[in-house]
Image (cartoon, rainbow, N blue to C red):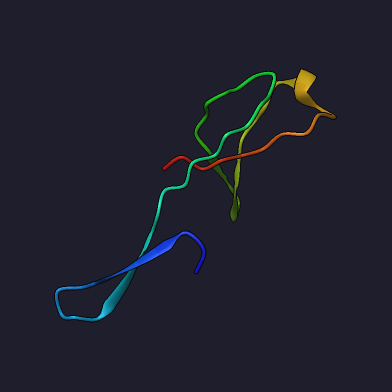
Length: 61
């Protein structure tokens, strides 16, 4: 159960909550965007000059 906290519901049964974690990364640029629906998945469009480069995606909420 990585990054999950367990607490109790009002009826005493356990409820899972994801804990926030801190990431520290080094990079060249950052863009903040909202993921858009694309069929059964999500999609983010990035600048064309990022093609061929490695990126890391972190969900913040």
